[in-house]
Each structure stands twice: as C-alpha cells, then as structure tokens.
Image 1 (cartoon, one colour):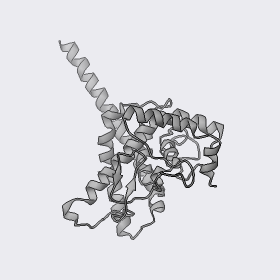
Image 2 (cartoon, rainbow, N blue to C red):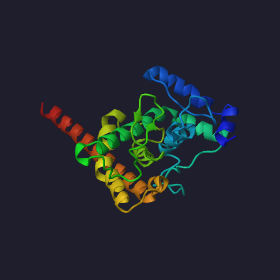
Image 3 (spheres, helix red, strand yellow):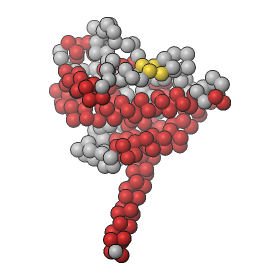
Image 4 (spheres, rainbow, N blue to C red):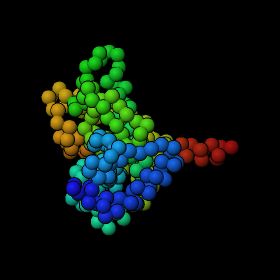
Amino acid sequence: MDARSKVNARGDYKFLKQFLAQLEREQKTKFRIAYYQNQSGAPKSPQCNVNHLIKLMNCLDRNKYNPDSKSRTKHPPVSNTPSLSETERQRLSKLLPLLSKGLWIEQRLFQVIEEHITKPKRKGVVDLASIDPRKNTLLPDSRYSFGFSAPADIAMPIVAAYRVFLDEQYNWIIPFDDFAEDFLQHLWNNYYRKYLVSEKLAGNTVGSKICRNPVIWDNLYVSAQSYLNQQLLKMVSSSTKREELKLVN
C-alpha cells in the first residue's frame, strides 16, 4: 500500500474530493484522479495522480515559497507530499481556489506544446527535450488528452511563476483572465521553449532533471516579476491619463 493509499484510507483527501466535485458541477466536466493504488478506472498518467494536484497548488503558494523572503525554500519542491498533516491540509485548503487556475495553466501549456510539435515544417521532428510523440498524456480534466507524453512536472516551473501575481491573501493582484494567456505566451516564447530546445541539443532527456533545474525556475520567477511591474506601470499610467483627461474636461 503506497503512501497515497494510506492518506486516502484515512479520509485526508476529502477536502480535495469535495472541492473537485464542486468544480465538476461548475465547469460541467469530469476529473479523473487516482487517489490510491490500483484504483479501478483511474488512468495511470502521472498527471492524474492526486499528488500532482497538490504539486500544482504548492506551486502557487507564494507565502511558503517566496524567493524574496528570508526563508530557505525559494521554489516549491516537485516531490510528492507523502502524508498530509492537519497543518498541511489547512494550508492546502487556502490554496484550493487556485487549483482551477493551476490546471488551466498546465492544460494551456500542453496545447502550446502540441501546436509547436505539430507545425507542418517540423515533419515529425520534435526539437523539445523530454517530449515523446509516440505516447499520450491524459490531464486530470477529462476534456484534455494529448498525443504526446511529457514529464509529469513539465508545467510546474511555469505554474510557479504565476505565484508572483498573488498577494499574501492569495488574491490575484491583476485579474487572472487579464494576463494569464499573454503571460503564458511570454514565458513560452522567451524562455521555456528555448530552454527545452537547448536541453534537447545538449542531449538531456531526463524529464525530472529538466523540470527541476533551479536556473529555469529562477529565470521564470524573475521574468514574472518584471512582467508584473510592467503591467502595474501601464495601469498607473493609464489611470493618470484618465485623471488628466478629467481635468482637461
């Protein structure tokens, strides 16, 4: 019996199951999540493991994982959380409202990768490290399946960059829908795609190493900070312009 099965047997995933049931109703979808070993009907895809959802939420915990604070833990670990203490459950409960955003970011990244590897000019040549076009990936939301495999944690450095846009109460500083897509494209085009291409050229194929490289986590985090600052400056200048117009009129 693996650690996950023990946590499930204790009923410690109940808070997550209840939240997902609510999300299913809201989004009119079905989530396929494996909560315990050999769960019938649950996909073997690592993205559909309950621990994967916990990782996604961890990536958005800007209070616990804050490179700007004095804490030792700069970036979220992408290792599994074997057991859930009461404190952990309380912390994760606060992050639950962010889970749908984490899932969205991951799903969009997979769509972006799919677009990249299916461009006609590539003729089946995949220039991204750790992406295998001979296998498939199922994401937790049953609406999303892809005809290539990627490391389970491929989206984590990107998801984690979004935590820069959260305040201490886990509210978005800028409405998520106003920046989410543009920011994802920004990270992909300027950093992540280039990173995966260079890793492939260097002959690096181990997915976990590629996803855990602290350099890419740092780069994406710093990029997120400058992106946020630019957005805030734009907002300030546009509101200043509005004020000036009011004065003129």
